[in-house]
Image 1 (cartoon, chains in turn red, orange):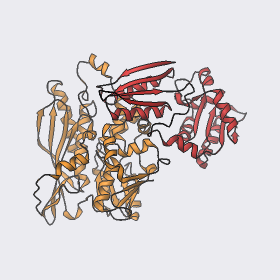
Image 2: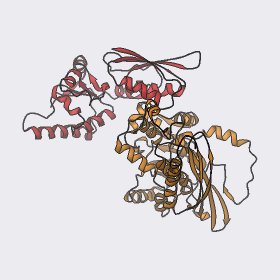
Image 3: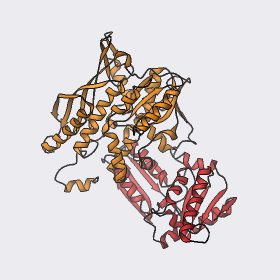
Image 4: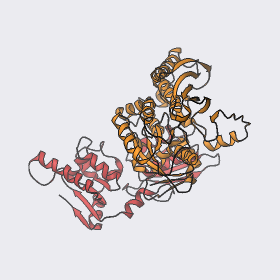
Length: 208
Length: 356
């Protein structure tokens, strides 16, 4: 866990937002304090913080520059809805809750011929997606996290679910163990604690 | 590959975009500022001037006879990519587009060039002009001269003259209630160019973006001219919302845009959600938001930002009746254009847009 400071004054777009993003891409960075010239950079950093589900606070300084503080909690899960711009996505999820969680503990569907079982899991996810059903979350653990690997044929449909408002989360321990850290966005990494919370809180678990 | 400012210092030559503060049509002055500036001007309006300043048309149109009008436009902007040849191509395609947006055929083009001659070798300037000339030649217009000055930023564009039959002119103001709106290129180039500069776009996404920005709207117009088009414009610095709004105002109608139907350059929505947004997207938002209605819970902030994103060398926006729209869309798609129906005009409060 570390805290970083950036002086982004005088830089032209996209340098300020890019420099901040590079720090936030590193999951060990907990807080970034950045000084920027104007409201435009504040707007851009607000979106960046929202993207990383981090909290943001903005203070205008005497010289009319802004001090922007972006911080994330250890679980890196839900952002704070304080800034008026940080809106929709979270609200939308809360509003559309279906109570259904898909829990994938292996990178295939059932037991059988390996290749066939891997085709089936893809078909399973595609079928849910195309039916218009939206689980509140798709949780992956053990070899299930391999579905999120860039080369895996399921990655696209998982990204589609995320785009459509479902949480798509992979167990951090498992991601670490199968060495997939580079391939999975940090804001889609979750803890066993969170997984357990999801499973207890939801109405129905689908686990093929 | 985009370099960071640290890398740049170790290079012998500055990147073409190094001294540029606002890229492409993102450098456009806001419409509200423009409106105020123009308000005080003394204007001569001969009856032959069919399209002047009033409706924020894409180009001026002057009627010479009952079957001939000339269309005149000028458009230029600072370098938006580091490759001078591609910059020249984009700037020329963008300038020529204003003529197509009026339904006209370009016949003459003049270069407009500002160039920091001390910072770059003459070959760079040559490449910009060569890129521009390639697009002028493709359009069938003659490159007939131009004007160049030494300046602190590389800036390039064209003044273009075109011809059109006065009955075939496509203006902002011809839209009818119920018309479908067809867009002939994806949007998101403002965000896309920033993301490219930041190194966020994959090679294929970046290539596809540049390929689209350098392509002329000639083919789209050629196809559209076989249909009954009520109004047209091209999507540039004021973003999709700004230009739809101009058409809605001109046509005294309201418009609805179906956000999910608007095509977006690939990988751009993700960059937008991360805050890679040009300043003038916010200027556009400030200028237009009071006329734009949408439900925050239904449409993501990134999508809204993209609808305000300033476009460079954007597609044509065509308004036509529903049955025409289906045939036209099929025709455009068949010819390889990334066209889609993105909304329609309706009879709500004139000069407003609802995003659904």
